[in-house]
Image 1 (spheres, rainbow, N blue to C red):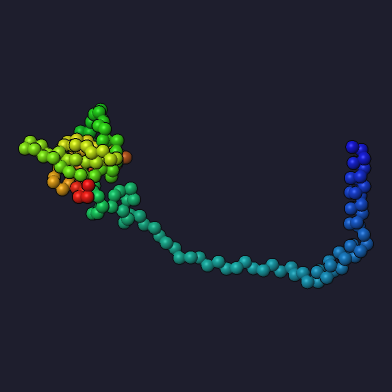
Image 2 (tube, one colour; image 1 turned 90 degrees about the horizontal axis):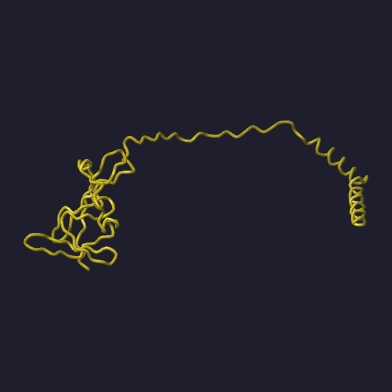
Length: 175
């Protein structure tokens, strides 16, 4: 270990000795004299930055991004009065575990007393009547017709009230 330390120390001294040669010092002095004559003490001014146009954002005239777009799409929204009647203790039915978008009407069965809709969800056909619940948002079948069924959903508005959405599930003719 002592030999390695001596060899390292000798190499270090040899490299430092090369830094103090008269040739490198003379080169440094000549470079400094040449550059001192060209140095200017003036600092260039900063460029002028132009301010862009000001845009005033007024959200009062815009629609609420958390509400559905009215007049189109798959349903219509309105404030519901059924919030007080909503039974939170009601046992949930099996079809309330699916989104309404997963259902498609594939047929209808009717008798003199009652009409039943045939809805398919995840490849299984279910027989439903008016008043049955389906969908994750308290959806309930309001009417069954030959070519469509109408479903009402109650969705919390986040402020203690409820919004009611009415939508139809049309008969899928290709099924």
